[in-house]
Length: 274
Image (tube, rainbow, N blue to C red; front, side, top):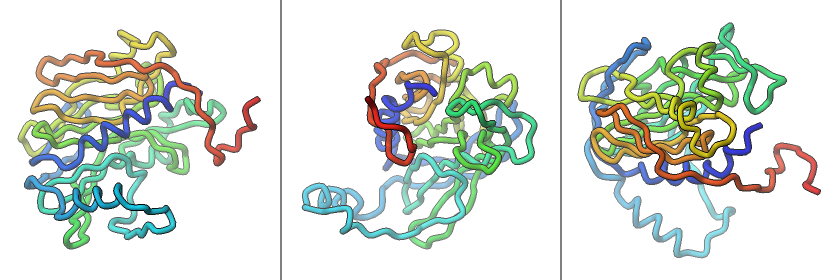
């Protein structure tokens, strides 16, 4: 099991939060890997009261027991990162359910005694927060998961700050793509056309540079657009923060994070540290 993932997961989540409340989108264009595409439409502003509500919660004495929850979308396939645009439109990156029945399988990087298999079940779902209507606006992204569809790696995040980006994870040595197929570890982008396309092979940077000098392992996990051609990507496998330029087809290391030992969560059922 890689020890890199936990320390960057926090960075990945921070980048995901930074990618919220952003600008308009139209659609993505297709590259060489065949996938379907849908047309995005949006405006600019977050839902009314979103920021003031957040501030009020931070300043109040609130316990988890006081929280209330409302289901706004169901039937999602391993949902990951979120982004929100104008007109109360929420977009959800779905990692998919892998490839049930697929023979494109590799040992699970987190549990080599089991297999994960590839398919094209990743997607992006749009949720209209005003009406509750949901629809998958893009499908066919690569997905890697256990035979029962759990623990999927695939489309992990979206960001619409002018550049309209998405990121597809991997969670393994990029060489594994020779078995599971292309598309994993790539940035995808919307260049103002009706289809999606793959732009930059982010995972290849780990093979070429291995920024932290440890195990070769890439899992682009979260993305935040800077402008129409640049984005920041948190690679939770490489343990690094990267800048990606779609126009120049470049990936550069912005920061590297040291491994950090943390207590294992109880649900893993691991023995206590000695």
